[in-house]
Length: 82
Image (cartoon, rainbow, N blue to C red):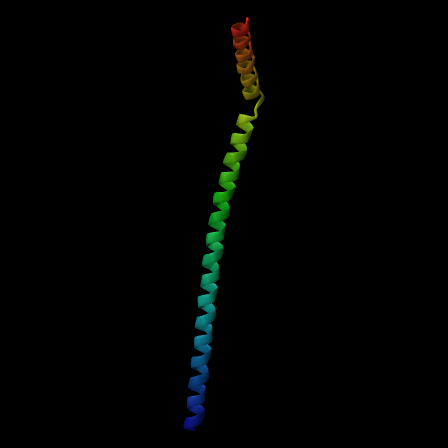
């Protein structure tokens, strides 16, 4: 009788310990996923900022301003040569 009671207690304890280990692993994985989502959000924001900056730097207005600066620089260098 005592043997069955001890076996039942041991089985319940083993089951509870296994459930605790599984829950601990589950929480650890959830924490890792949460961190990855946070990092993904940061990377997406950084990508958006870089795409915007790229578009601003490569816009036709910016290219036109750069061409005008180069043209002025060429004119001034030609005046010095003459």
